Amino acid sequence: MKPAGIVGIILIIIGIVSLVYGGFTYTKREKVLEFGPIQATAEKEHTISFPPVLGGICLVGGIVLVIVGSRKS
Image 1 (tube, rainbow, N blue to C red):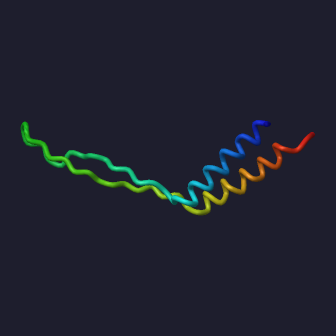
Image 2: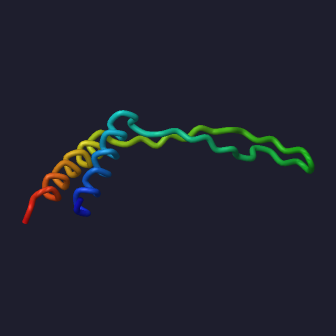
Image 3: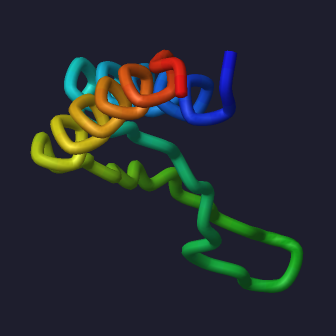
């Protein structure tokens, strides 16, 4: 398979995953208070969302690259 086809398959997978999940959430532990040997921490959730347009562009671009990569020259 040509490199364009491989990149196309990767883009298709990224596009489908971003359309299905829409983003991801991660937890970060931060110090809230530090007073001598006593420490207090808090866990905060941060969300990174992917716009649906980004997933659609990846999906369409991947399909185009697979088609172009599969053509014989």
